[in-house]
Structures are given as structure tokens and as C-alpha cells.
Length: 390
Figure 1: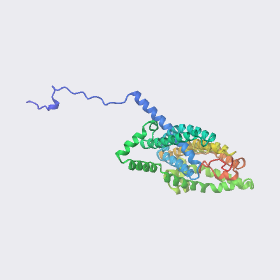
Figure 2: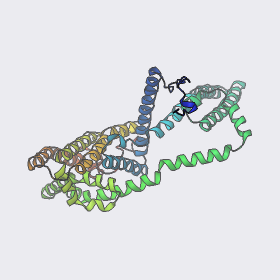
Figure 3: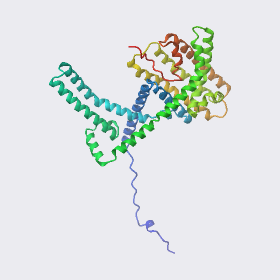
């Protein structure tokens, strides 16, 4: 009995080898990884600088607090520290735009110096008019080149392209440039979520301030009434023990009522006491060095550096708060009482040192009693600059 053999299954037909799927070489993957890492690091640096600038603006401080709370909340929901680095790639693009604009502005700045010198020597002379004319031409070319680079992709390499204006003319003749640019700009602004961060930071500020206002009010009267000062210090120590985790709970659930759920925080502490203790110690110790900036008013020229220092200490502390608050979800039963009491004993020295530093800040700081109510560890990143000074 003969068997039927399909045409593609004929033993006489040799199999055609399938070429392996093209994969990038090791060197190309390494270069791509290094480039992506450098891009991420530059984006993170740009993000910190941008937040530092926002921290120097009254309304921008709520945006910064909202960002820090959102970062803590995302880590609390996932348990991964990397989830707290929000908007790094977006900040990288903004940083590239800033660097490109500054580098291209340097020749314009140099020419403006010569034009100013010529105008000082002979305001109506031909040299001053020529420098002014060439400066106007260069400024116009600069504006067109920057605008076209932003339209072309807003990457650093786009600012280095020499014929952006030619691309703009060709792209304009194809049509749809205005609508495409408008939609891209609108989508980019929406992706920043500025109203969300502002509202989130405002609510986070209100919840924390209501916990702190009474202890700080008593603490501020300590130089007049020692009993009130001692009472304020004790109340502040109790509040500080729970407030970072109440804020982490608020950031995780996005509910203002979370600031009232003290019993839930206590129950979660029993399931992860060492993680809570570590986070609290890091949070308080990160806030202590910032009080050194209150001893003397910082010049206005250094306000951005002060904002970067603030974020360098507080941002990691917020991430650790979120990480610690994610730990109780991994365990249903409380830890042994020895771990719970060990956690309490660990945090007591840190809380005591923090309360003493806060109390002393009103006596050694240039802002006096008002510095008590800033509480940059929990509230707004208030800049320590004297705007009335010279």
C-alpha cells in the first residue's frame, strides 16, 4: 500500500535553512546601554534642578511637595524604589532644550558685549550701528534656529543641525505643521500633570500641618514658658513618630482622610517594625542638616544650590518612606514583640535629636520662631533666602 506524501514533505526536497533573526551586536548593545544611562542621569539632574527652581517659587512649592508625595506613593504601592523616579525622560528632553539654547546663545552674548562697548564709546558712530545691525540679524537667526529645533524634535542633536530653517520651509509647504505642533505641545503640557501635583501637594500640606501646628505652637513658647516648651517637645516627638507614614499612606491611597487613620498605621508598623524604624531614622537625619542653612540668610544667587541640597536629602527619604510602607503588605501576621520593641528603641534617639534641633532652630536661625512652622521634612520646601537683603 503506497503512502501519500505531501509536496512540502517530500524526502527528496532539501530543507531550506531559515536565516537566524538579526540581532544587534554586543558592542551596539553596550553603546545603546551607555547612551541610555547617560540620558537617564542627565534627565535626573535636570529634574532635580527643575524642582529646585520650582521650590523657590511660592506656588511652585506645592508642585514640588506633590511630586515628592507622588513618588513616595508609587513606591508604597509597588515596593520598588525605581518607580519613584517620575518624569526623568521628560526632564531629559527639557534639559536638552535648555543646554542647546544656552550653547547657541553664547555667540549672541559675546556679540552683545561688543555692541554694548561700541555704543558706549560712540553711540551715534558707524561702528555702533554696524554692531547693532549684525546683532539683530544674529538674534533673529538664533530665534528661528531654536524654534525650528524644537519643532523638529527638541533633541540636543536638533540644535546642532545647521539647516533647520530649510527644513522648516520644506515642512511648512507639506502642510499640517501648525496642527501637529499644537497637538504635540498640548499633549506635552498635559503629560506634566501640573494641576494634579499642585492639588496633591496642597492637600498633603494641609493634612501634615494640622498634625504639626499644635506641638509647634507650644514649642515656640518654650523660651517664655518652659512647661509649654516641654509639652510641645513631647507632642512633636509623638507626631514625628507617625507623620511620615501617615503621609505615605495618604500618598499611596490619595485620600485626605488617611491622615486620621492612626490605628491602621500602628497595625502596619507591627508587621514591618524594622523597615519603619529605618525609614523614620533616615527621614529625620536627612532633615537635620538642612537646619544648618537657617543659621544665616543665604544670598539670592545661591538659592538654586540650596534647593538642590534640599532635594538631595529629602527625595531619597521620601522614597524610603514609600518602600517601608509597602513592606506590611507582604506579611499578614505581626512580627515578634522583640522586633517591634527593637524598632521603637532605634527611633527614640533620632526623634530626640530632631526635636532638639527644631527647638534650637528658633534661637540660632535668622528667621526666629517662624522657622518652626516651615518643617521642610514634612511640609513645603521653603527656601532659606532673605529676599529683603542686599
